[in-house]
Image: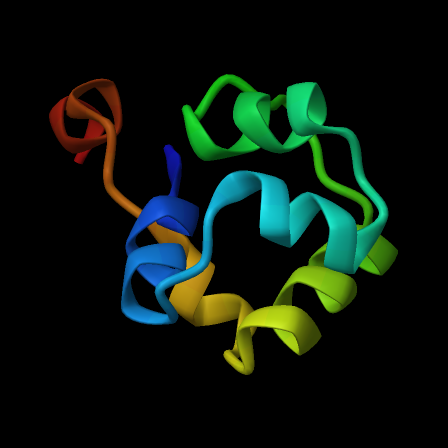
Length: 74
């Protein structure tokens, strides 16, 4: 499963969701969905804008965490 650590990077950069929304031109609702791990997809252009605004790499925001189902298949 992919975990979104957007809230962690925002806290490190002392940036609110509304500030990030203004910088990347994405609605608060859509950023909130992403931040709360409810997004099913993210556009590369959105990811690029978020990384530019937070001065980070995609790997700082997205993390792969093995699912318990995946572990049991091994």
